Image (cartoon, rainbow, N blue to C red):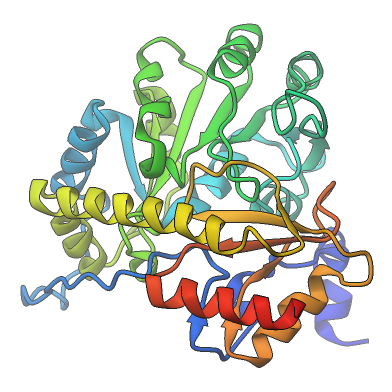
Length: 360
């Protein structure tokens, strides 16, 4: 028996790591599987300070993000992507082997994986899967179970569904569960900014909002996210945050991205992607694919209507043609589903052509 087999923590033996887009697929020239922006925005970094450690928290960056989000600087924590925010919350509030988190599948996979990494149990309350409230919270069950959890993760806008959760439902959960940290993951909020819950921080001390620059800001490569919460939660997060969480180039580029001119550029790019999203829906309208939700994000979730074809077959066939999309069929309730990132006009045209060829 090897050292690793003998000495690793027991709960890790059955842990399946998150299959990120880069980890699970390679190659291709049309990347529509990771919900990235197709825009390659240029920023400069040349301030000659790389021989020094970066700040623990950049006051300039946090002030800029607070101004953008409409909150106070002491309500902002800069993190290595929003994934680090997920991990910090679990580490800070959950005792290994004792406490629970709550998730509402289908949802972002890292909530459960981060919990399992720290031997924290995950309670699942699936989203409603049919009827007029399809894709929404089962509020009564969420409240009942959340009272037994330290942290509850609500993904809105949803990945992978593409819809938003009803604001009244989220408020009901926050009101009913004052002793549970309710986390609203807003990774895609720039595509529907009026639905943000960041302004609710002044009302709800148990609310946390997660944000990222990876999507609409087109900065997935710098790994910069933000945890928004009231000051007491921010102070707790700082206790366990790494000494130098963001490298200086990330701080510098993120700060540039949050200037008024670059925020305006981001918003213009969002408008372009929303237009491309609607055009892509039209391009695919005559294929045997059903759009599961009217997306408010930069991706579309489709279900294959032909029983002889499954999602994995479609993904594999397109990958052979250099077009990468995401298989979501292993998620709860998403049998036969694929997720397609909205790309540039040229990428969307190529995707449509390859899909039409596949089904012809």
